[in-house]
Length: 275
Image: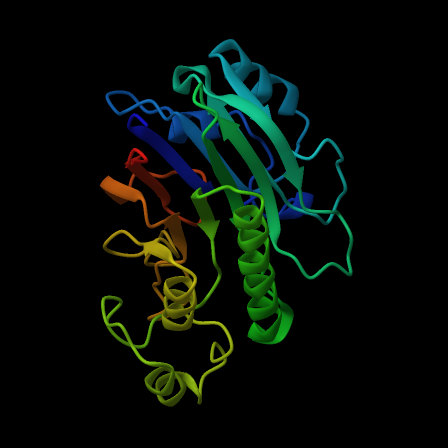
């Protein structure tokens, strides 16, 4: 499969509350800046269909993207917007969305199954693990567990090429991100902290045990502005997760992101051919 350019951004629409972005069209300047690779796949989490959504959607349709976002609009619920460019020359087989149910335990997600001419399938999952009141990371942990179950369901359906991208909402790291900690080491390190149930190193370990790779750019994605009133909390909250047959050619957080409290993640990747 040829190289794929992706753009992943938390766009801070705050479920239509009005406290974050209240327009979508300005986001296009972040997604399509001049003199950069045009994304083949765009994933926007913490997304909400504001009044200018039809114009925003039309921009992508005119550039020959297929757009997927929950057809329902419900205040208080974020969506995940995914756009797939016709340049990939892949057919869309199925699309699935998270339910807009206040009692659900799954994260926000939009899943798209793509199929090439050889009938090989690729799953694209845009995701946001939600944050909970009073720093209750048990809720985050439950949603991450549901995400792993969803990925396992994809595999049982015969899909081996998988890409998941979005905001994992795990709070700050307590040691080097490149350290592969044992479960015992993770427990000792995080047990006195709120993010003990759901932290970067437990996410990394869980993914590895499920034959998935966590790809995280250098630096941090949140908060985007160091003057933001969160002292010493900079963290790489936004990640790319792939199956083992994927290679990353380039990945970074985009410092020039303007219309969010998170830096966007941009990457170029390719999946290895099957024997």
